Image 1 (cartoon, rainbow, N blue to C red):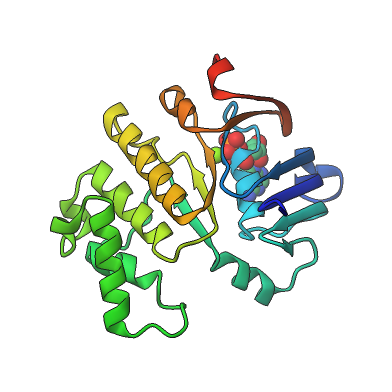
Image 2: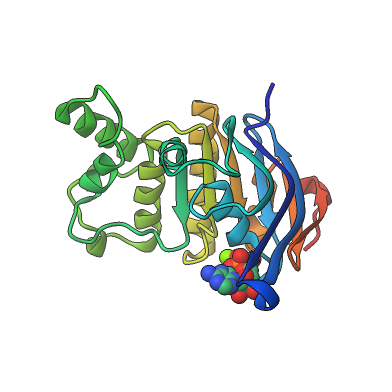
Length: 233
Ligand code: ADP
Ligand code: MG
């Protein structure tokens, strides 16, 4: 099977000419369908930059970056927009719209899906919120939800389109350990049900066991890979 993520010889620098600062150096990484991979390493090592390149949120400069079969190096704007609609993103800050209810926030993610009526979108948003345990909170605005509940709305929003790839950047950083673990287990369960691949950046040692593989990054390089049982951080 073709990997969902296939990165080869990827380099990235911020700044131009003599001011260019290399941030990613010769990254090589393949992630297979259904894999849950954790990416960890010190702050500033390049994890967010790598994730934003994979998600088509930033243009690739050098190397090869194939995501869901699409080569991103030299891809057109339209190809990047297309790709983005096939990926679920979950960030540290949930990025929900405060003026919309939980259901409206999740429903918005479906607006680009072809062939769905307004009622279909509402039904799917409600079903996904129910799946994350928020069936009784569909009409609440983010202000009236706890941190863990907001992050679960963000997960519902990322998963409602049934993406084949989820990119999550420190999704538990703002949560206490109990809700952090719950949120990640929820991602794991829903991803298994939908046959989806997850790449998750985290500093949170308590969730390492949900991964099939843990990759360590330092100073812009992937320095080693371990299985969760061997991981000592
Ligand atoms: P991490 O997510 O591992 O903390 P980042 O990918 O955010 O690391 O950052 C890697 C390096 O790139 C850091 O030195 C950071 O200062 C730098 N950096 C990140 N984003 C930018 C940017 N937009 N412009 C210039 N430098 C950046
Ligand atoms: Mg980061």
